[in-house]
Length: 233
Image 1: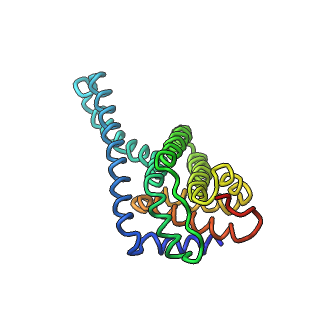
Image 2: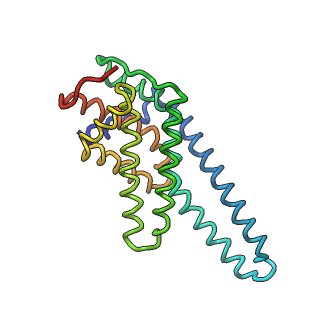
Image 3: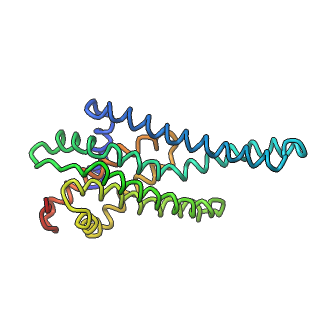
């Protein structure tokens, strides 16, 4: 079921129907990452200037320059899951509607959450994801543990956020959360796939749109198993 959902989501992500949303999501993702990069760069420059590193220790200044570049790369990788959730919340309903219409034309369409509600949910969860990833960043240099912490935390967080947002088009949010809990291995497996994409540079930029399509397909397939009550709305 997960493999079929992932294959369908990959096809949908680069389909002509979603091409316009793909470019918009890429632009928004890159824009948010650029803002974060500029902010972190300014902080590093302000720190160096306040401690007079350039004037007193030119060699350390050069070393700090390269270390800062590496640190920014690592920091952006750990911030990417939170950025992904924000972008997904912004484009969720437009993308999900296309996926539902093209791949499930015989099913009743979902209902969009009010934009303010969807974004508030996304912002709140992005904040939680940011805090968790900052905690995972602390153990980045511990062999094995750093990667495991990043992967495990984001597999859970991304599975929870993406699945519940997709399911909320058909069910109240508490019921969407209960449905995720009823299929923990499959939803966590989908989250693990998204967390794996986060590690791959450039490819991780398409995670918001791919994640939406993946969870729409997964929700549809799980709903047809008959182990849960029908959608409440």
